[in-house]
Image (cartoon, rainbow, N blue to C red; front, side):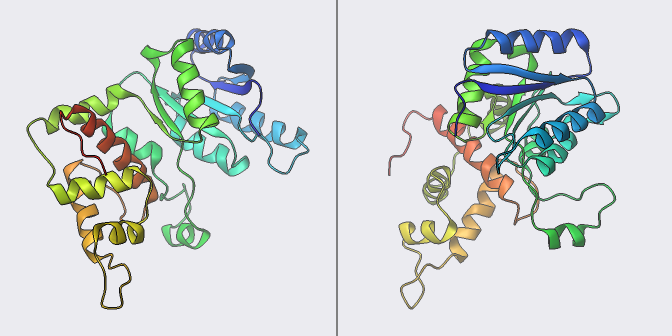
Length: 258
């Protein structure tokens, strides 16, 4: 269920910045300022308390968290992951001053080792959720926040600021994907699995089923082209690849249509 106004929590350790973000939230018709915190411990206690107050099966569903990346000695990405362990239906967006493709990969990453937790234990427990958005502080205003909220809460999609993508695209000018790579990227951006992509691209085994080997090779080439590192099994990389390809396709004069 989407609230008429989306309850929003602002987390920032700088009072002036936090007050500014809170004011923008209050000026955004789609949002409602529900709470604020100035450090990681306060934020964790706040969300834990809110969860205890909720009676529905999915506490804090469709609530939005806006958190600064740097929180004193804490880190907004790690805090966001911890908050999702408490309330998995939250939507967490990180904001910072500077665009970074490396940070974008970290924001959307699903596979990671929690502090003090062996990687093997993390794998046994299953993949942890990636966060939902990467915004830039300097672009904050009510229209920007409205766009973020509509993307990550209303449409349940991920958000990444276009300036972050532009840093990547500057390195790609003059480089072109092959037709097969681009066809594969189109299907990835549409959310298809490797099996479905193999069928669409005509990669079949002797029994007529999908042969994903060629697709996996193409996907690997796409990750290299767009400078996306990480574990091959991490679904967060696929999210980032979809964003990267859509930005790349937007620069073309003749984007492919399938």
